Length: 358
Image (cartoon, rainbow, N blue to C red; front, side):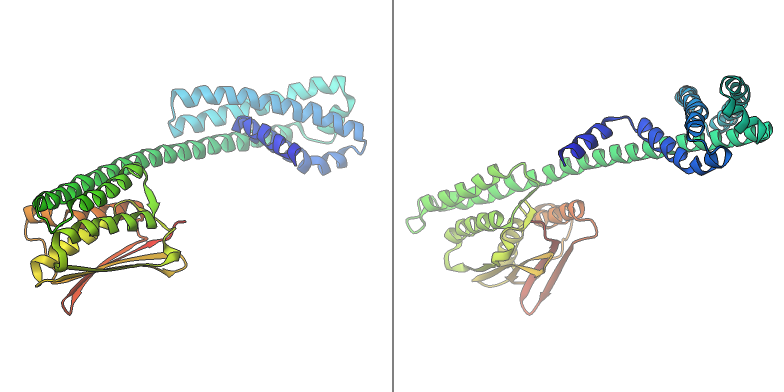
């Protein structure tokens, strides 16, 4: 097994051209073996034909490659490439005749197999066609490889752009949350009924979560969920009995990987809009579960009514969290996620369905 792995590693270190060249010529030799045996059943003569005829053609293709590389680097115009293939293939085919004739003087079997049982003009056409096919395959593989490299470069550029945009969107959320949390703590400083020290501790735990996963595109759902519990505690200390929350997460969902800071903006909006649109206490429900083996459902609901954005300012200040999440989901799970909003019977519910990644 180790020998096979070593051979595989050595093989893939070869340039792509040489891998195709070796495989192609070995395959060609195997396919033409019955023809050579029919012309001369002597194994020594057949082996000599391989070395002389196919060995020389192998060398010719190396020269053709050098010409094609210069042509391709200077001008990739299809018309010029087609003309170069025609000229080079005809020239290579014509070279075969005098060379085989001279070799036939040295190796009698070559003279018999080429000139006694074959028509020289037929050999010329056969070899010209052969070199034309080789040329088309050479440029075809080169074009496919360049297209693949181009697609890879575009994919890398798109990945870098997407990562930069995701980092920017995530960076918007931490200051947004921190601003609101510090305002909440500041408002309660000096209030003997509010344990500010505990609020600072919960806030510290959330910020520690942000630092630990600041550069992670995906984080465990359990980390996000526990961080939001700290956020709830900060808000609970602020609003007291005016805020009630029920939270549940399936054990099987805790290890699922999710985009960082996806749950907290939903909870923040639920509290904010619940206060604006319903009488206290505001009720918030968080439910995270596996819907099917490969989907994760994140649900956040609050009592109150849905408020549509009513302008640029309102959208920027009040709906930044939801629109932020939607853009991130579009980047991470194009055509593979769902975000739905339902508002009825005095409740507003937002469901997010994303593929499960473990």
